[in-house]
Image (cartoon, rainbow, N blue to C red; front, side, top):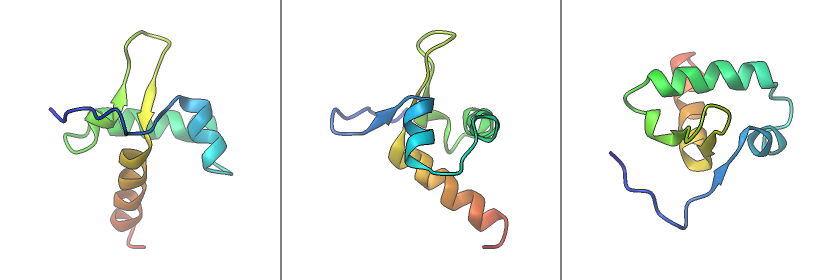
Length: 73
């Protein structure tokens, strides 16, 4: 498991939506499920409680680049 650094940027869902204009909450939810199920990306999503979620900004950007590559972009 990846060690968490105090210098990393972790955001809640609203923080991600604010940074990525045009991203909808429903799309974000689908992508978070996909990230949690991926051995490569699961460590970038933390759910300490059922309602609370934090997403690592750098990991989310890596996931977006991976999705773009998978689609051939």
